[in-house]
Image 1 (tube, each protein chain N blue to C red):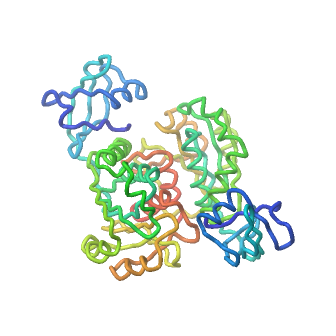
Image 2: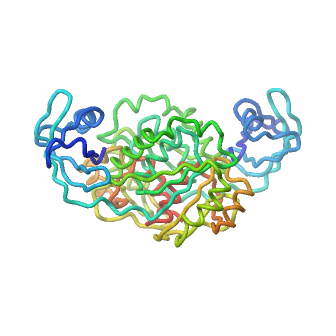
Image 3: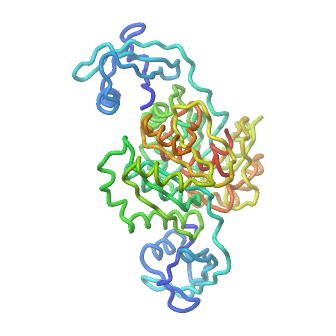
Length: 236
Length: 236
């Protein structure tokens, strides 16, 4: 936890907040903070600043909060991800949030197992838990928006061209010799397939929607590794 | 499994191999291969090529193997990592192997929990399992070399300057404004700290050994994410 993420409901006065539960435990046991300690903090979808601990009780602490800084700039990236298996989804949601991604589409595809769509990880409260962990890690306050799309063709044909408008549109796919560009640093819509990759028909549907197929070279990476790798490559 | 990794002992003839166990299960259930199917294959620390399945039995399969290609070029990177917690270590070993890293040092540091050094993951057979998974993922045959260094100061003062000779020497550390260079593409020795980072004294010891301290910008990433992010940034 590099940033203590506060919510409006944590505030007990205009500049005073009280925290218990998971965040309290972390501040006490891992950060070993005491009365008078200062922590980086921020309000969900709001400003960032400093919290000074004013009292430390058995199961909660109070702090004086000063919010005077803007959160870091979001990445100009829309990430479209074939739904990964639940365990990997958790880690990817946390890591891409820590990297500054603010717009995520989870889509179906031929090689996505149907059971993945029934995972409780996809419930809003669960996803928000991983977003929060990512924001606390990356020192940010702005929650990503996430959309779930169960119909690949309909989504790619009707919605994706609008989503990708005025942006560089890329599909990451191992089976091409064209290598993903580096240091793009402009608005990008990046589509990443499932383990095993998109099937040819899906790649063609994406190409028809204006998405160039690019690879990361000779090696094939797990979705989790590829996602971080591509984000790092595109934005420097 | 994007590449079937064979060992010398799998060969039952000069160009014939037999495979059972985990690899057999994967080929049968996940890849759904049949007699006549062709698979990418390679021999540990040797050449790559194609395996054609000649017979499929209840618990093993035989194949004709043709080895005619060299494995991909290794990354010109020596990775020095403060020992991560065992669960994360497994994933990092697999992902950096899939990325082409061939030289890894696991080192102690102030914020590494002592118990991590007792983890069975550190045993050679266990580490090799994750290297194998990484090679199968990234389509490579060359096993990384891994060294474990329990004494930070001694290692950094006496061994690291020799290891880093004729290479770009970097320590990734969040608390600096100097941002890690991109597309270096030359021999690099990269040191990455533990969760929570190196302590100041450790950073100074590394600086005295010739290692420049660089960050990845305003955001702070988990070691796992940072490792992939930095490798992608340095080598394009």
